[in-house]
Length: 420
Figure 1 (spheres, rainbow, N blue to C red):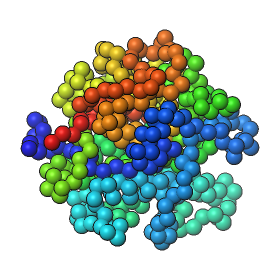
Figure 2: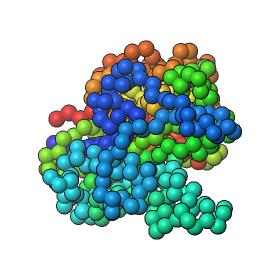
Figure 3: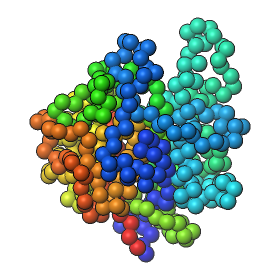
Figure 4: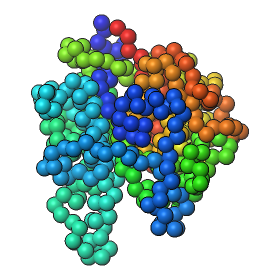
């Protein structure tokens, strides 16, 4: 077996993953809901008092979170806890925890690092901190408040919980937090700087996140029909819906994984990322396309070899048009494409990791989910093969997952099916 790529860099594989979203925590749970075309958006009655916010839609994670030792999670807000659940599941899947659930030596020897991001930490803790400036109120603040809301809250808390002593990369780049974490982790291993990387992103649900898009006129207000939205690429789409969750990948040097007998789920074949450099919130299809091209170049393949694209698909007016044109510019054909956000909304910092893991599993299953709520493609969107109806059977060797974020951050990941 060749453990290096043609460019001499080490090959990187996925040996475990965990996700927390309304689709569930396992691929089996998610697969059943995707096959059933289950839209999980809800009307949030607890937001009714926010009369100045038009949208009342979201996609919360409603299952009770597992219990962890209280002393070890004192510095975690909900976003930290979501990242912990996903990471615990990922490490278990990868066989990197002992019988008591503790980190094995390979996690603690300095050759394992972490890359993790979110949008802005725990909102409740942030609100408590602001109360000091706003009202001079110190009553809600304790020694852990800042730890819960600091930008590196997920990465720092996870590193301490699992005694990770390798490098840390904090990817707080909004909607590309999870995908950049995977990409930068892949590069760290490929370059020989680490053997294993724990990579992912998380975000908790807050009405403040929905309000951000609401004031921009980019949030869906189909409050009476939650199941009918979001509707990416549809001519009658009216905006995005915020969700919550977390996704964690275990990435590993191929030789290292083989030597320890790890199960391999896919190979990370390529990664591309760049900045638009033009506008803080309005995407640029030209630079988005370059990010996709960078990923293809890194993977050493052509666009014709990619069988499916998991799109960012926010269902915003300009976002969908820009993304679809970027994809068409690179592929120059009607490549099959769908977006997971039509099931669980936009999980912000988590979406890149959750959607990548689902894309890998669909590749291994040979079936790709359709776009929900897509009835008539907007004429301004590029002529791609928008998967509709009951999903699509595709024998794919390579798949792509794309994400784009405020600040003009673009990412593209390419995964290759693993075969011995």
